[in-house]
Amino acid sequence: MARYSVNNYTVETLLSNIKSGSIAIPEMQRPFVWDSSKVRDLVDSLYKGFPVGYIIVWQNPDVKLKDGTKSSGKKVLIDGQQRITAMAAAIVGQEVLDDHYKWKRIAIAFNPLEEKFEVANNAILKSSKWIPDIAPVLEPAFDTFSFVMDYCQKNEIADQMSQVNNIVNRLRGIQNNSLGVITLAEDLDIDSVTEIFIRINSKGVVLSQADFAMSKISSNDTYGGNITRKTIDYFCHLIESPEDLKDIKNNDTTFANLPEFDAIKWAASKSNPIYKTTYTDILRVAFTYKFKRGRLADLVSLLSGRDFETREFKVEIEEDSFKQLHEAVLQAVNQTNYERYLMIVRSAGIVRKSLIRSQNVLNFGYALYLALRERKIDSNEIEQIVRRWLALTILTGRYSGSPESSFDYDIKRFFSYDDPIEYLKLTESGELSDAFWNVNLVQRLNTSVASSPYFNMFLVAQVKSHDRGFLSTQVDVESMLENRGDIHHLFPKNYLTKNGVPQSMYNQIANYVFLQQEINIKISDDAPCNYMKKVFDQCQTQNPIYGGIIDEVELHRNLEQNCIPTGFEEMEISDYNNFLEMRRKLMAEKIRNYYFSL
Image (cartoon, rainbow, N blue to C red):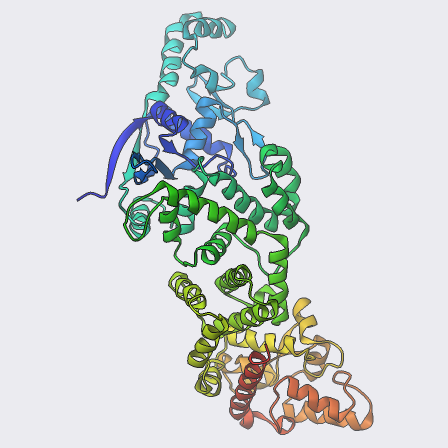
């Protein structure tokens, strides 16, 4: 049985249905990404009768109203918005929003003599051979006869009136050309809709569940969905491009006068935060913390009014879901909440985005922070839970890949206990046992991948402990990270290469250390037994050569901070494999001590 229907709509009918609201399109406030030449090409294809692809809409379910009657669900446009916007711009003369949030007209000009379309420019505006803007020509009340007479007179082609008349009528006829509209059935779940979308879409574009949710939110004009969408969209835009604050304020004056704009404009004053959020991130955080669910498909269902017990769709559930989501979004974009969460992240030693590969670790951490605050948990306990959970999820790869089922499981479990810290301790006992620290983590440190989360956690532990770089007296690891310091080899790379060690072995992360470049240059290709002898000697001579350490107690402290095994100062090529094993164990132990200090 078909799960969708295919119908042909004329351009005029399709635009009319969107205008009347029977097909709900997310308000055309998100920037129009097509350049003007693509609008021209679309109009040219319509004129020539070429296919311009399918529009995909999803039939919303009928919703049960409070008086027991049902309201027919609208169709929501989920693919084809750029084409619809292009047609509205060229055919109806509607302004579009560019990527700087400025409204502009895209006037498409037409030359009847050559039957050629172009984007209007100054030369075209001065030429009598061009219709500078086709939109007025396509209006119902347009007087074709008078226009053709005037056009032919200006261009001295009175003998071609019949030909020009036919061409202008053909131009006006593009509104009668058909587009295919695929209507997806109302009982399809998001996973099925996604699969159909991918199979139909010739470019193989993947439409995420967040995209469905945003379409659902922004097409709602009853419960303020578009205000919620703008709050999310503009906030994320300002985090990425703070310089556009003035453009948003000037070009969307209605929104700029709302309290939601006051709630997000602070984002324009911040630069390069550790946690840069997209609309998917904000949606996921707001939904997870407020609704105690992790699957965005459930958000779409709730915004449709679904009662998960009776499987009916009720208007009161739809109304309440939009209200709760709006409240949750305002909490997620709140400056105090956002900055306090980032303080917790930094207090855990995570001082750069590069130290945490999974954005979803930060997403769940923020959702957990907001949920704990809403539950009025003591602030010190909140900080401890969130810090430890961030570290635990990085170490275990808990949110790698698709996180939704883990989000759903964890947020529900955290709030099924009277004290949320009970779930943290239960998870720790299962995931971070002695076997994890003594065996699993040591094995995971056996890798040559420099971006390994385990090496990153070692660096985080060093930051948290305020450790100095290898052989450094003043420059700490955090400063090196902040200023893109260099990672170097304890057993120099060229030394290992000359002794036949392959790349996968000389680039082991247990051979990496943060080291000032000038110290590394002096070490050159020496074996540890050579350069470390000189380091120890300088503690006797008080003449620093490799860094500034001239005190043996301070040197041993520095070696311990960097997990350098005992006897390193005597090691040569035959000791390399044993060195790696020893250092992995020391690194794992440092990470363990870091974790339980949080």
